[in-house]
Amino acid sequence: MRAFLVFTLLSLTAACTDRSALPYAPDPTGIGEQKTVFVATQREPAEKGWFGGERAEKLSFLDVDVSIPPDRKKGKLPRRYGPNPDLNRHFAVTGRQDHANVQAFTRALRQDLNNLPAIERDVLIYVHGYNNTFTDGLFRVAQMQKDFDLKGLSVHYSWPSAANPLGYTYDRDSVLYTRDGLEQMLRAVSAAKPRKIVLVGHSLGTMLVMETLRQIEISSPGWTKRHLGGVVLVAPDLDVDVFRAQAARFAKLPYPFVIFSSSRDRALQLSRRINGSHARLGGLQDATELSDLPVTLIDVSQFATGLGADHFTPGTSPLLIQLLSKGEELQQAFESDMAGRSGLVPGTVITAQQATHVILSPLMLAQSLR
Image (tube, rainbow, N blue to C red; front, side, top):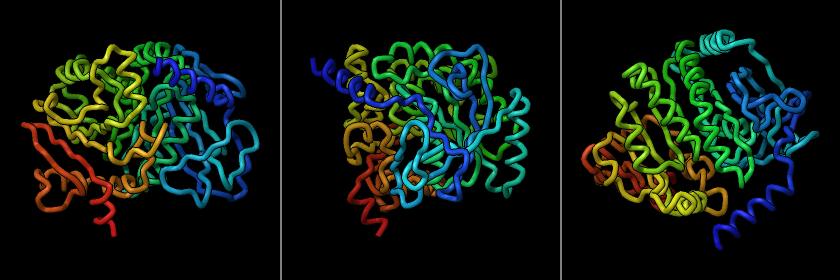
């Protein structure tokens, strides 16, 4: 009954707003900061040439300019669906450039990478989760690019989500439908010769990430280790047994391989009930079940702030954003502070054979940032 009430609440909330209406402002008038996001999508084109939730037979490639409002707190993603967004207050799309095919997409990526200093020629690829419109994922990438001060390029893989709280089954089927599309995009990004590729998946998008990497490993053993400079799974809505079976096909897992978990993630709690109470990877509270895998499990339970925000905590908590922006420095701290003895990590670090379990503390983090 409680699950039914949650679903009903989400459905009624979603019904109040047409989330498919893209906020477009072709004349940004110099307000806000512009970020360019490269996009590959297997969504069917919809109204005014943008993209809805229907499945397309082939990928579309483009890059999109996004305006980020000034005076916005880190972690916040204010938006207003539909025409005439207020650029002082809302994220908005301000332009686009379509690419005729995957080869043109790769050339555009390579050209933009070559315009960067060699040390900044990195690419972040983001795969969104369940119940996302084209706009939702696009703005999330731009928000991360800004808040984490990413110097390289950002790429969004937008798969055909129904963008409906009651569309979970459709979204899971879409994950299977679009594996080949994500593989094509990953190979296209690699062909642009970046210095490093980091692949980030969120929620149900982590299933797509793992399924795609698994099929790449079957056809090209060792490809992911050679071509990816890291994999990050945020709040993975993925059965632990399924994850282990997927990981077993890898010659070697990419490094670092990071999993963000939370015991307070209400979306994953609901998913666990829907899926027969099987443990979700994003809800793990210790690394015992992953001890034979070289992964880092980061528990951010203590940073959860409320409904919705607790399903993407690493990207919505200002404290965590400040910590995680340190990137490679933070990873080195995890490796050198295996028991939390030196104080390099604001929390507890526990090793379980090959796995590392990090329990972050808001109090310790706040003190370390003073």
